[in-house]
Length: 511
Image (tube, rainbow, N blue to C red; front, side, top):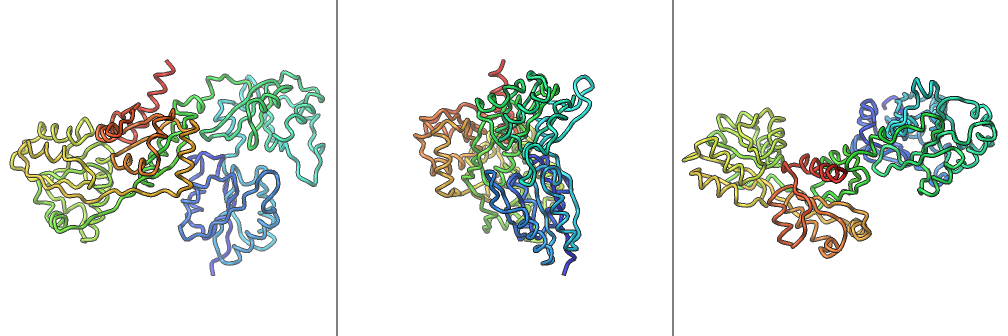
């Protein structure tokens, strides 16, 4: 049996990119992950699929599970010989009861390691453009709980001392006592006009902030609808310029965008959108099936070196081709002297991951453009050209290459089918669109259009304020065939181009 070991891991404040590399490494080694409600559930993907995953979330001020029970659970799972990750929001020891968990493990003779995380107080300040220390405003910071434990009353905290403290005060778990805290600080001598700020859902696309003088900050929060979880900041540093609030000034901040690709594609698109501070609804409408083996494909794979040009129209085509080569105990050397053409830089980058450098990438990322530009780049007369692409692809590329004199073998190496979402997910997306809660629906292929509208009523979209974004001409034509209004077409016609075009849409609107 393995020696028991528990990692007390800080998952950071919420933004999935703020978790540390060490935390990811610990998760990858876990046999059991015990996670709380403030840790982003996406982090569970870093753990092995076979790892046991146990939620110990606490909700609404009343613990659904007591801390003593969590301590016992940590000890129990470790004594089973498992490597345990205790995943906690923010930092594992700053107002997170990590010390109690460490004590329980120590008393049970179980080894533990502590992996620091970015605490919510620092993240909330920095994602709001508030500088807790600054030579002109504050040279000291104090982190304080605004909700003492049940064993201690409110007066356990020296509010009079805090009233005299001339620095930045950062309060955790203070929302339920905010009016009382402000009153105690003012009674202790803190000026009523002392700047204060409250940040809710820090680092996430629904981050909110309220600013104002100490004597009215509670009322301002109520008016703005701010509630827990939130961080309260008091002091001169809280009065920073709105221009420094870089996160909430991102072009896509506050926008809710529905992504309709396959699950892996949605994950990649969601990451790009998240970097622009958008909120993403994953509504995967398609899934990929491949490689589709056929006599023609087997023949082509066996004799790749016989072709003058091999054309990939997507990263998926590259991946499925390489998967099939692996089955036949071949690798990139099988391409021999054949030249490689790719639609779009992402497809070319996929080739490069396998050690294959694309010989040609058109300036415009469409099949029609590739056929035209490749004919201008190279004499295609009597050249053997192999297309390895989706079963849903149009004939523009093959017809254009044949028109230039090439002998084209068009093989569909994979296909896309509709991925049916659970009824609950369909109802949630429909309600979001109907209520005006969704700003955009993104479509990245004709098959995503088909898959989405097989599950969501078209009239619902037509009658709502939601806008439609298309990745390129072929997708646009599919949407137009449904008499839908397209508000944006990506340039370039890639996932990154789609995100850039969405950001540019709002940047232009601000001018």
